[in-house]
Length: 69
Image 1: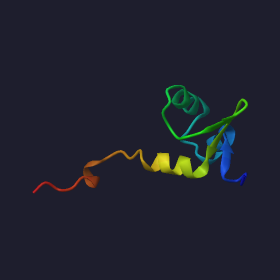
Image 2: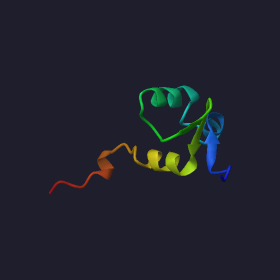
Image 3: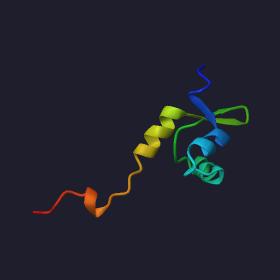
């Protein structure tokens, strides 16, 4: 197992400040959010799963919508 690929909740909070510990816990409780692994009581996130989940959460703005013609 590549340890740099898997991040603990605290490591996620450090590397991705937009994701708080509480937010991650709420998402896990609701079975939403990025995929995670639970080994005993330790929760681990795969970096690629975090990146994929974050990339799938865009907020569409007027500038990002196609022009109506």
